Image 1 (cartoon, rainbow, N blue to C red):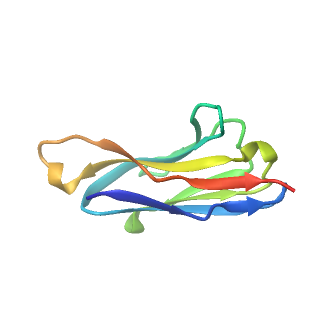
Image 2 (image 1 turned 120 degrees about the vertical axis):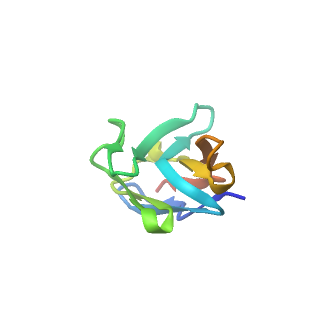
Length: 124
């Protein structure tokens, strides 16, 4: 069974930094796009960053220049380095992986998997 496990959230002061990690485990044939999303109370989930298996990266303007996404394909892990954090970055952060489970090799299709979410709070 495939699962995504996140770590690295917490409480940080404005201007501080945090690094999130998300490891995909289970019987996986291959992973395509991986990414991070966030959801603040009362708001819709929004894109934070995505990275393809080949390293193509996408950020919205709200985090560009402050956040850096990276991945280790050998470890099926995606990271999010967050610098210069602002109170408006406070949210639950979710990782996402678009992957093909081994059990569906040859007949299935890529599916989206989500982590359980990790709280990031930016406050003085």
